[in-house]
Every structure is written in structure tokens, then in C-alpha cells.
Image 1 (cartoon, rainbow, N blue to C red):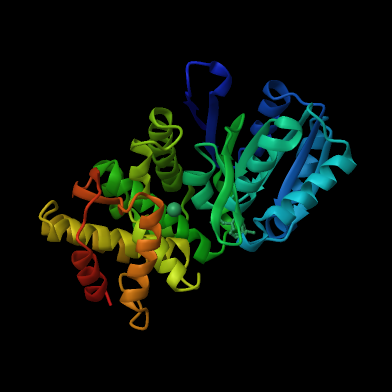
Image 2: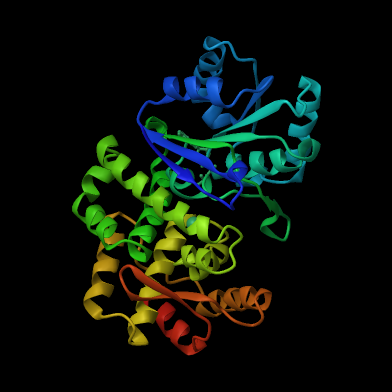
Length: 363
Ligand code: ADP
Ligand code: ZN
């Protein structure tokens, strides 16, 4: 098991450990029972993850003598709303959860975001632990303390910053993850390789087959690397005022494409297309050389992620979706561009025509 500490503020109270490994549930239980004592634990998960892992996890808590209850909700982004929050809070009250209770978020980003949100407001805040079970949650959403639910007009519009007391990422969970979900995580991993670490980029391109086969030894190295990158960015910029924006590489256009597809394009596919677009824009504006652009396109295709925007998506719709995002941010589209692999920067004034041309070329 590898472990790293996220140091936030000067106050040690907001620092916590991320632990990563393969089949670490037993050790995790020892750590929870020793370091994270609570009168009661409530395991919150979705019904898909629950049907595979809830019983085993409940038994693990009971085996070390901890008092544990379980709450499940329906899997999927469509559950990430205030109604589900109210249902869960109602159940917490029924169980008798109080300020001596600790929540355990077992699942992907949806579970993590929502449990974090509830933990941050239930009885003015109770502690929670993240046990991320998707690749994307292990390398991204479980670290950094962003919590949120969706509103009818958009995703993640109601939320808080609230750090967990610990994160346990067990690679064993990835063995049952559907391929599509695994690919979502791959896109984020490639993103880390592009924005932060030429070494990670090389490790990934040399071991892509092993990664795709979910080889736990290779994945451990990679997940650990990604967590380290995310953690060090979050440490410097907890509330996303500057540096943390670099994590949006590929996401500006990616989100627009996802939205225009009415979410038939997954987050990972959108980010893959957005990363290629951002790299092509960087090359057109003469920041990035062509050989580096080719390496980026190659690794994305090698991972089995898409390189082309479907013909039937209207460029005008994608552009207008970008402008919608623009309005939120004082009329500027903050695009993350590249000088080279490992050297991203935020560019605030890209000509619409360049973006438009790149979208057209990618069809
Ligand atoms: P994300 O982590 O990408 O934000 P979700 O939380 O929506 O995504 O999880 C994606 C889907 O994968 C959900 O249907 C969830 O139930 C399912 N899932 C999560 N973890 C696992 C796992 N380890 N094995 C099988 N299915 C899983
Ligand atoms: Zn993402």
C-alpha cells in the first residue's frame, strides 16, 4: 500500500492521507478503527456498486467491531440531485446519525460528490471517508474536496469545498468496472501525462496494453502518479483560483461536445476530443510542435478513445455552447493550451475562428 499526505492550509486538521493499493480492505479497516473512530459509520453507495461490494464491506466493518449502517440510491448522474440528498438525509435521521457519525462514500464520482456534499451540511458538517471505486474517482474526483449536486439547469451547481478525513483507493474495485467507465478514467490519466509529467506520458505510452488489461502493478504506479499530481495542484490552489484550472485541460471543448451530444458522448470521450482540439489549437498558434501534437493524438487513439468529432454534430452548436460558458467567466473562454507535453498554460483570448476551424478539421 502506498500512501501520501495532502497538506492543506497550515492547520493540520484539514490535511489527510490518500492510500492506494491492491486488495487493501483489511488494512483499511485497521486504519479506520484505529485512526478514524466514530460512534457509528454509514456506508453510502449506489445500487450497482452496492450489489457487488456492499455486503463484503459491511462485513469488514462488523468484523473489526464497528457499528455500521447502509444506505443505497440508484446509480447514475441523474440521481445526483436534491431529491436524493433529501432521501438520504431522511434515512440518516431515521438511523439516528448525529455528529458522532462518519459517512463512508463507496462508489464513483456521483457517490463521492453527493456524500461529500451531505457530509458538509448534515448537522453543520460531519466527517466522511472516500472509497473511490471508479478509475476517474481514484485519480481525480475523490481528491481535492470538491462536493456537489446538479441543478436542473446544469451540473455541479450546488456544492461546497469539504475535504474527506481519508481516501482509500483499492485497485481491486477496478476489476468489475464497465469498459466505458474505465475509458473515462483513461482520458483523465492521459490528461495528467500531458499537463504535468513527461515521464508519466512515456510510462503510459509504453505500457498502454497493460493499462488496458488493468494490470494491477502498472495501474498502481500510474494511479499513484496521478494522485500525486492532483494532490500537489490542490495543495497550492485548494479553491481553484489559478493553478487548479490547468486540470481543465481538454475539458472546455470536451464539456461542450458532451452537452451537444446530449450526454451520449461520455466524459472521457469528450475530454479525449477536447484534448486533441486543445493540442491542435496550440499547434496552429505555434506554441506546440507538430511532433508533440502527433504523440498526443497517438496516445489517445492507442487508449481506444475517439479522435474524431461525429459528422452530424453542428460546429455552430458546439461554438454556442462554448459561448454559454464564456458568459459565466466575463466573456473569456479560458482554454488550457500547451507549449509542450508537461508545459500547459491558460490562454484567455483565442480567436473563435481558430476554434471553429479545428472543430471542422476534427470531423
Ligand atoms: P464517475 O466516477 O465516472 O463520476 P459514477 O459514479 O456515475 O461515475 O459511476 C459510473 C458507473 O459505474 C455507475 O453506474 C456505478 O454504479 C458504476 N460503478 C462504479 N464503480 C464500480 C465498480 N468498481 N464496479 C462496477 N461498477 C461500478
Ligand atoms: Zn474530467
